Image (cartoon, rainbow, N blue to C red; front, side, top):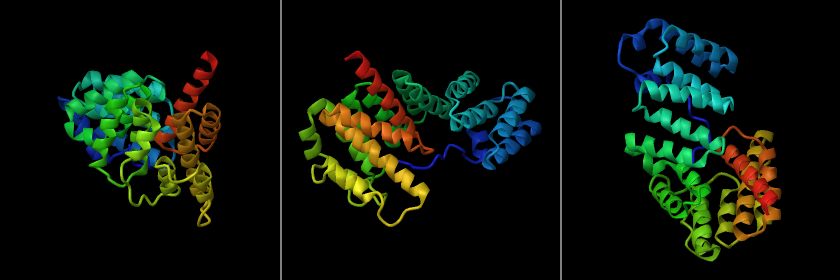
Length: 288
């Protein structure tokens, strides 16, 4: 699964993907404002980027590209409800905009709207079928919706896209563990040879029944990682330990490790997965 936030495509591609009929979309002032907005965002000036995108929207209220780009800025800034509003408008203006559906699905997941996220991912795939094979986000939403067979099939499909991703094998395991039991999930875990991200191969061995939880944490500090790299390694170690304990029926250890994962914040969708899972564990505790 990708581990960098690649939502900001080249502006030319965004304009191509989101172009709507009519001369307004080609307005040079809008293009200039969006170019400046993207440059500001790339330079770390998020609020300036939002203002410039807002000016582009004011210049041409029917600009799909302006709504789409501002939605992605808001997504990156964790302003999920506002991002959804912009993707809503982009879809109203261009009902065949697969990217807007896909991004809205991601934002809906982050707000705990699991079924709605699946509906958006499904629509994006309907519009652009090539998205289906690599759509790991839909697989995760299937898991949280309790659609374990659909999730299992999604991750099996992703294996044809990237056959060396431990996370994909783990999420298939998690779907199988819920639907068919942990023993079968472990015995039939997808084959992964060399995911070079630390500590992914130790995570894989744990889920395959060939390692202990301590082995995952012991691997994290190998090679004297930088503080940023160490934080990322700790996040993934704690996340997949928490998910493992949840699958095998140890709610206390699950909560401990998932909460620890949330403390190691990273700029990736998986951090939101950890946060959503932590919220679900908390709700589970209050209802039991």
